[in-house]
Amino acid sequence: MDVVLVINADLGPLHRVTVAHAIRMLCRRVAEIHEAEPDRLIGVFPMPKVVRLVRYVVTRWRYSKGPAWSKSGVLARDGRRCGYCSGPAATVDHILPRSRGGQNTWRNTVSACAPCNQAKGDRTPAEAGMVLRITPLVPSWGSLAQR
Image (cartoon, rainbow, N blue to C red; front, side):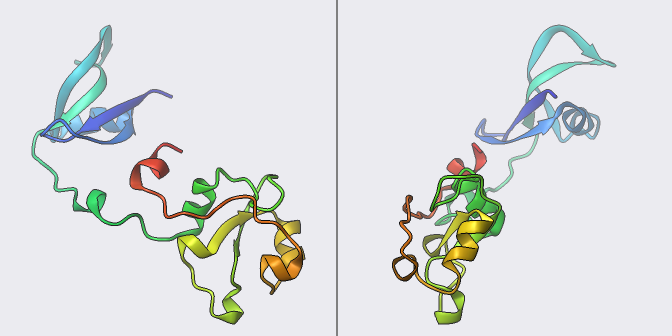
């Protein structure tokens, strides 16, 4: 599926959308074509590669300290790999368990596969005799967007 880059009125990149979404933006006149593929048309519009918004959109969220914590964010940050065995991960493990006051924070959570999460249980990695192979960090907006 083709994707189209959406840039702000000041030419700063915002995000990517599908071609269908970009055409809807052109029809509603909230964006205009900034760059297009030559000799390819979709109806009356050339096939867009980059569309530019007509009006500037304030993006204060990009300059905040970082994205809010979420399970899907932790999985994306860790590349869906287990922090203990490097296998495929589908769950999130709290390094300091929630029952002991551990919070849902970027530095206290790591992706984990179900067997490792079950084996660690309600203990810290040191108490469970498990080695944490990654260092949990607070991701930037850019690092999450690339995944």
